[in-house]
Image (cartoon, rainbow, N blue to C red):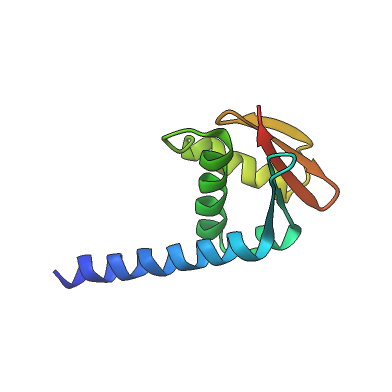
Length: 106
């Protein structure tokens, strides 16, 4: 029983830092309807980046379900290693421009 309680606490802590990462390192342009992510977003722990990016893609792409984890992990890896300029995932166009990443609806 204690294990389940510990997992719930851990999940809530990760959720807290995910929201904090989104608030601090992203900007939503209502005029262009796109999310702009700065470089500090990707300097967080892997799980925080994964959850925050997944939530961002759901929000922008207006989907009910998150994208596949394997594809999202590959996208994060390519963005971190500067091997990606433009990609589509979950109904969104993800584009790397300089040190920022822009997510817009496809």
